[in-house]
Length: 230
Image 1: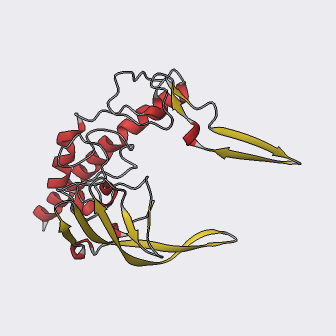
Image 2 (image 1 turned 45 degrees about the vertical axis):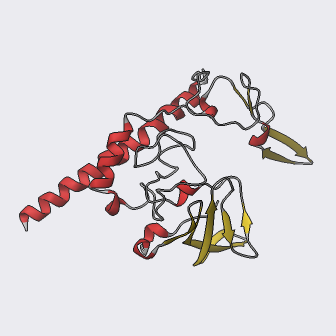
Image 3 (image 1 turned 180 degrees about the horizontal axis):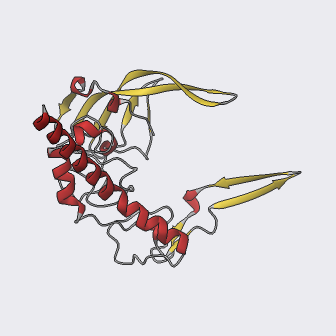
């Protein structure tokens, strides 16, 4: 997934060009980094072009061009909600109140930082929009479901004195629908897991957006007070 630097500014410069009613292109700023012996380090940023076409995966015009099935248009949209606030699949997850989930193509698409990436911009109207859809969000997610089987996800390879652990969620599947790596929200078969650790994680995930909205409201009150004092 491409990482955005849009929350650092310049979002007013972002533009979208419609090539046809079913195809658009927009400019996106992404971070550039390198792997050093001490870890990964961001060394700069650059702008690339992204093409979204109805019925196809997003196409990134970078290093010869590439596309990935995991990226969706919502990740780059001003109306989207950041993934740390909602899981992929939680519905609705759009400031317009749409319940279509994460999509590859949308005629309301507007490039910009998602809700949760810029506190100052999120105050006011954007916060009020998020507050309206908060009570409507369906927090069901496969990883918190009793029917989600991850038996073959984690593989342990002991080699000498070292143990290698590999996680491959493509091996996970739904015991009811019998489909690998299948995310469906809402799902009539969803049943909250009995695993106490996952139940805690589930409740914590549900509280993130609510707490962020409350933080924005407190910031708005502080700004109003400082304006009155001045």
